[in-house]
Image 1 (cartoon, helix red, strand yellow):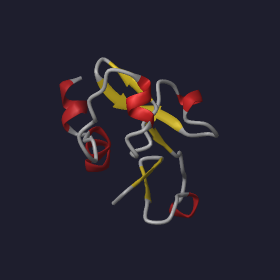
Image 2: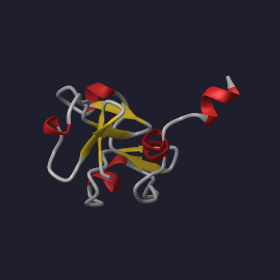
Image 3: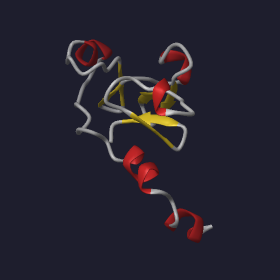
Length: 90
């Protein structure tokens, strides 16, 4: 099992790294007004989503952030690439 974790692709590692530190909060309202697309305050940190349903469409909620699933880069928003089935910023 430990070997599988060590062999994880770099894009999977990038997914686990937050693009920017999560904003601190004490209420959902603080998150909604922070201009970062966050909607929920969980354990003192702002996140975009709680479940995939809160992302909307076919997007997936992974560690509090919404990701668009993909098979090719053409399915991703501009400036993103399809990596390991998710649209990610390169």
